[in-house]
Length: 221
Image (cartoon, rainbow, N blue to C red):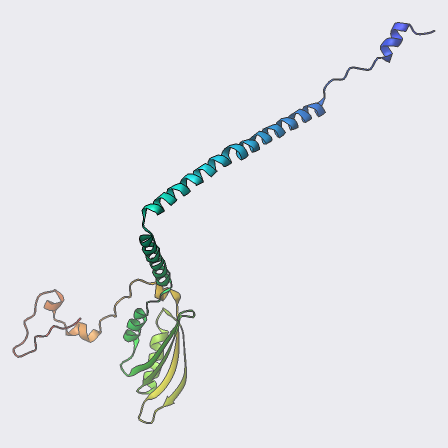
């Protein structure tokens, strides 16, 4: 039995297409693209001219200020600024060797004297040459240096006896970098003999009358 003509026409028609997820994804991607393009155009044609105008304004102000200051004054200012920058650099790298001399003076034994001194900042090393009265004095001096917390190592060589008496030596002291960065060096402690020789009145701050015929020079403490 043949199908009716109406049924054949309905079957021959294409089904209606409904938008699916692929169409929605395409629309979303297109929206993102147009938004990004709008932002880019705004930055290129909006923000960049604004920044260029600001830079031009600052440059004009600097040029106007430079014209107000005479050329001689500009040269003096530039020279002065260069000197300040150089001084700052030197102070940042400068080693206050006076601290080292003060420290060495306090730590040197009575029977030891130094006649040569050289300091290397990069290695924080001091090379010393000196003379000790006896070998025991030399050993005592080495022990004094080794007992200091700011000294990392003590090396000595060329220990020899002199014809006129005494022992000559060469010594190398390696210091901790923190030693040269310290702002204050603690004073040397007072000797027990000096503390015992002070009277109770002197310790309390009361003046002590000098004995008759005694020198009136002040005593350095």
